[in-house]
Length: 301
View (tube, rainbow, N blue to C red):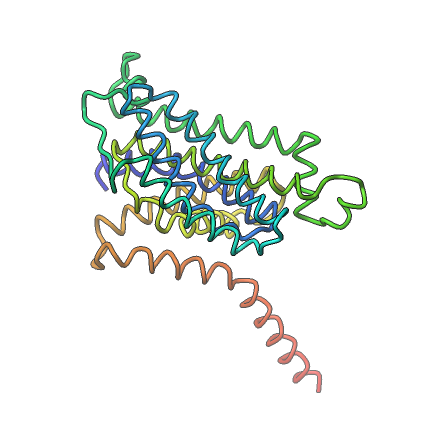
């Protein structure tokens, strides 16, 4: 790979790692299959692009985070108060966000012209080269987010969210509001997903209504690839494994775009297959263990 391609993969890997953190919270900590992700990623992307186009790039990032949290709150309300199945609640929110995102963008896409300020352009104004600014800011945003989520899940509220995902009945018996913890966890998860979308919008200098398509698969692939290498040990290690998985996935994705004989539209299918295989690893191990037991029984006989 050329240095430009490598730096691009590194930069995007750190930005999409923030997405993976959000997926890890909903998928692993809360044990909720939250399909809001694709809508909240685009929501953050659209809000960030619109506010940046108005001349407020830093506010655009903050607005994206708030937008994602609101999307998570809606899904949490549907799940906890209206008793709608988590999968259906996510689909409902995601579907509604499509119209909201179109309204925010004003059309199917929005481009940020070269004379518009972005957070990456502001960073380059500190005397750094363009690539150094993009790389440095991507690393800073990701590492700062990683430090915050690790700290948060060591606090009392964070521990309550973790306990809610592990055993909601026990948490309920401890007089902790399970619905509130679930909603808070979904707000945090989607806030991180939208944060990633908002940063990506300013990184690539455009937002498209279809940009969120496949982001759930990307996030799951990142989480699962990281767990396959590091393993499932603790929440802190889980966040680091999500970061590692996001980097590996982005390099695989970049290599596939630049060197694969397959057309670009096949990449989502490849990602889906990777996720399916990774999720099936426990089943493969189970079948291998049963086969070993049968072979051992046959020898003893």
